[in-house]
Image (tube, rainbow, N blue to C red; front, top):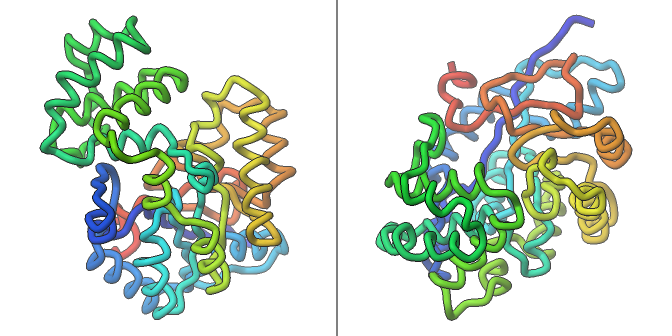
Length: 324
């Protein structure tokens, strides 16, 4: 059978400003406006055959031909807007989608990357954070990086371009790309406590992320639930076999307990399977049907793509690569 190509679209948050304002939180990071999202889904409804990721993999594995102009839609992280904002739009247009959900927030735990998005979400406080709280946190938890931070972090031109201030870009690059997970976790917890002294991490997690009822609601409406691991750690950076097992298999077990089956798909947090040992890749293959990456955000899949290494197209590139 001849090779067929198809894109897998990736979204994060969709117009969650009203909900976040209501609960008194601000988030930096990636989001799509409601108008833009509705326009994208309308285009797909009119011009494409929208399938879930498991549907596509099943078709390929059984040697069938994909419908013309097949496409899949995915959402990362499992934030509240996926149920409150995204689901009604998808349901009204008859569009199936795959939601990759982290499981730590179900137990009141915030992954480091989301603590950081909260801390840098209020632009009025960024100078205080950059000039007071981050230096003090480095003194406590990563003193070897203190002088480097004071001299200024050299952020690559392609990173965090959507951020409004250089200080935000430097803080995010420091924590996400320079520090190891231990200091990153300690510093992000410290910063969260400085900015939100009256709220517990558990309360914040409940406001930001899907709970079991939300996940079940998505599933009952015909949406696919996939694992985004436990804590959004980049899998190739995990040293401990026990921690790796918990991220890959533990998250699967948690979601299986909620749904009664699956999940069949994993969405690798901030990466893919490159850099993993053969033993760890085999563990993923034994646990799931396939996996979606977050590496090259402009690459289209094909029926010859390894189903455990399926690239996705970031929604920023929709007009250039999908509606062309």
